[in-house]
Image 1 (cartoon, protein in one colour):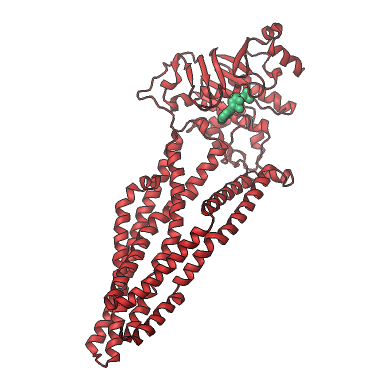
Image 2 (cartoon, protein in one colour):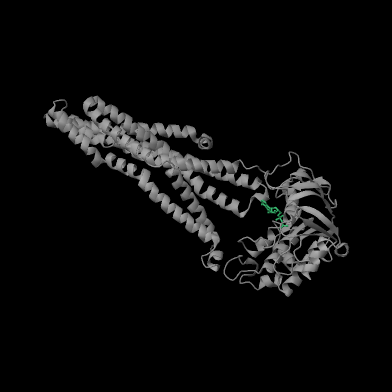
Length: 572
Ligand code: ADP
């Protein structure tokens, strides 16, 4: 199973701390043995000073040794666990870096957050605590029982019989409750966590729509389900569990210990002094069991967490060529689609059907079509957000899958509708296009993107942090910062998703100016939503339901009188 596969590197350590926990429980027994000796000698007046000192020393040694062993084992487990957690987190981070860009959606980022923060922590409790706890629990139960049996098998049998009867009550109670309610409870708990995260992420939308959005509905449904499941759980397995815990508590155990001592003494089967070890050891016997029950819950959660972590680590990374091809310096960065088809999953329909097209270097190609026609899919395939299902995409004559993905990405700039800004300074946001660029280069790129003056108006100019108070950009401004990022990277290929929202005419004109300057000398592919911005494009490709239905210049396509002409007509 996934959990044991994941824990393989720490298995030896876990076995060692389990053994240490077991050993510590043996030392714990020294104190009751010594106290019993003291008590029986005191009762028959044979206690002398050396014996008393010996007993006291045994108590001290047992106490110190058991605590030191547990401390050392727990400490060791924590050290190993923190190294394991560090390795696991960096394995996850490396793996995430190798996954296709298209994998990193909002949904997957929520999943990654749960895995890295919550799931890895659940594994912590299992590795750092369960070995010692289990060893100690089992040792207390087995060694303690063996010790009590050695004193009086009848008395011990009575006590163990009581424990077995309690367990029977517990199992019968569990059998009588509707099965699956623990699973229902765990599911409801998970559901509540994920809908709380979704709600927190989408709180602005929720507030804007007066708590009536589906996000809020989902959260409130999840809360209801959780409350019902908790109630059902308490009504069902919760009751026998609580009764068993009460019977296993020291107060509950006084019943068989006191009644047993009274009854067996009257029958003349035991020496009454035996009540001392039975009181001291007997009440601790099930303490292990009460620790094991929460541990079982923890293991169930750990199993789930391990499955999620393994599923993430099993996600197919982007295939990297063993010996990457290189594009000769100065080669024209033409992009060619050679009979490309693509579907998002094996069961999904084709998002693109047999597309063959050429995007010549030093020219602007606009991709247009109705929503859902495959424009974004086509553009993201060029940056290997996903790999094609069939066919090939070539850059400067080389299949993109034969290039190192870092090389491929360094040759392109991708400008998304919202600019794709991160919560860092404006300067760093622009520098992302060319790490190591100087401040002067950053400013030059911002001037070329017609955003320099706007940046200087910010409270800290280029050092202002995006998203901090007073540092907010309109869609058009964010896109111009992204254009500055593209300028500084000096890419061969520019992939641009034009903003759908109508920017104000001033911003619009500035974006067009910046774009005109940026596109010069590059292979530019722009997803156009407003046809008025692309009348001068060198080539327009028209997509419909994943097929390339028309291509040509604006004039040619209008004259053709087909899909494009109808779209053009509709937008006038
Ligand atoms: P456009 O950009 O023209 O609006 P898209 O390329 O976004 O179109 O979408 C083309 C088709 O692929 C649509 O049917 C869409 O539902 C589907 N699609 C887009 N992205 C994904 C995705 N990440 N997973 C599954 N299907 C997707």
